[in-house]
Amino acid sequence: MKLTTKFTLWYFGIMLVVLLIGGAIVYHEIQAKISGVEVVRHQGLNDLIADQIRQGGDYREHPTRKRATITVIPADSVPRGVSSYFTRGIDWNPEFQRDEFKLMVTSFYVIGGRHYRITTYSFIPSFYQLLPGVVDSFKWILLVLLVVVVISSGLISKYILAPFKRTMRVIQSFDLKQREPIRLPSTRTSEFMELNQFLKKMTEKAQEDYQSLKEFTENASHELQTPTAIIRGKLDLLMESDIRDEQAILIAEMQNALERLSRIHSSLTLLTKLENNEYVAKEPVDISNVVRETLNTFDELIQMKALALDMHIEKGVYVPLHVALADLLVTNLVSNAIRHNVTGNGFIRVNLGREGLVVVNTGREPQVPTAELFERFKKGNAAGDSIGIGLAIVRQICELSGFDIVYEYKGGLHGLAVSFLPRAPASKLLQNLLVPLHS
Image (cartoon, rainbow, N blue to C red):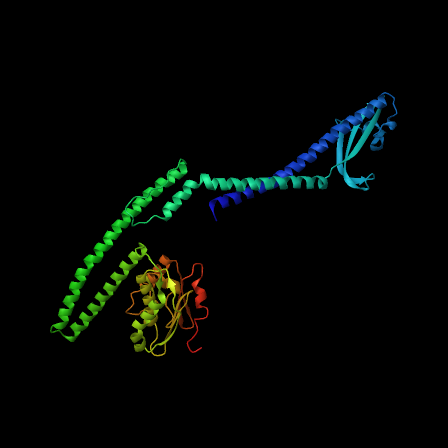
């Protein structure tokens, strides 16, 4: 959700709450004002009737006589300190034959030594009569405010947030491998100026760290090759010399450890290059051919382990992936399926379509959760020839290419699925493929 949309929703929600509270206040104010005006009018009317009584006139002929009650009361019935009071409530209106809001004002007078109580009343608009008008008014106010907020948010997004959007576009196109410092758009907004200054310092630091790390990786990779080659050569010479069986076993173990070290070094170097986005796809690669060639390469190993191979490869499947990465992705998935399989009665199922690639194989239950197998140096079992980086490389390739990857284990079957389509979960590709081969 965009920032301006969030601001609009927040402003609209705040205005809605304020309008609801304001509507209640307005209603009570209108009701109080109407009652106040009517009370003053009736007090004046009571005074007028009292004057007519003082002057000896016939107050019964007054036009308001039907809504006035004049009563002579004892002196002790007059409330102390109160010259008049009013009451209001729902009562029957005989004129319109319905219940309405009735306001009564009672005043007390002393005329000719006698105490009078004069009460007049009238029917005024009630809550239910005022509410529709108040609600309609606030509907129009809310509509106008909504239009104003939407228009103003659009203007804010277009003009006020324009420097921020330009900065975001520059950041999105920023590449650590570029030599030139980042150029951010100028702005006169102090907050955006602080943001640009921070981003400039951060990107410069990131470029320096990237170059340092790249130089260190290249130097370490280069320098490690020489002593590794020397050690390998010395071990080969030592194996050709006159040695005992126990020494030969030790030398073989040293060679295996050296080969393992070499693979770890190559894999870590590859992961570093992947994290630095040094592989960019120039054009889509035909992954159908890559899968076929990889399976042909591992054909002898599959036969050596007596594994059944079930493959369904759709022709002409192109994905936006670097050729080297496509080969690494498929090679790691297939080799992983062979290495962690069972010998004699196991199988491998490879399914490739435009939606994605699925590799299913038999094997022992992993000793760690499948989600952790994508981490570096995590192994599902204690296979001696595995260094635990293959799936980490696969995940890094998928993240770099925007693919979704999932690993599941069910009923003695390992399933790895890679979805090529954006917003398409890879787990759906495994729904019908994690079944035994004979079924």
